[in-house]
Length: 65
Image (cartoon, rainbow, N blue to C red; front, side, top):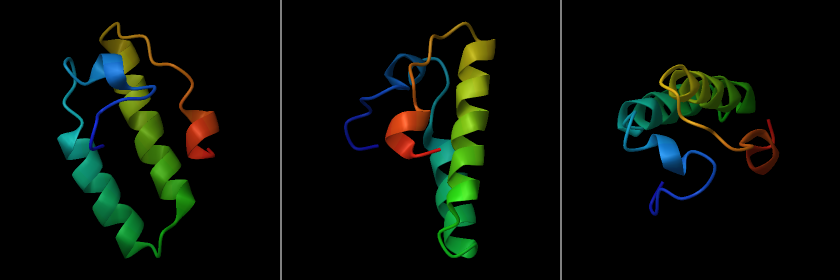
């Protein structure tokens, strides 16, 4: 998040990640760090980016999803 680099970089100017990040942080914390929640939020962000024509690179490998 700090450098906004990585597989979602091209999407950040199209779809702001802040709301996804805040929701993810809250949901993961409220569910004792559930990786399933993290993967669901990343999937939602990737899907939203793709719907807006942004190419999202492999995010599953680095995130472990």
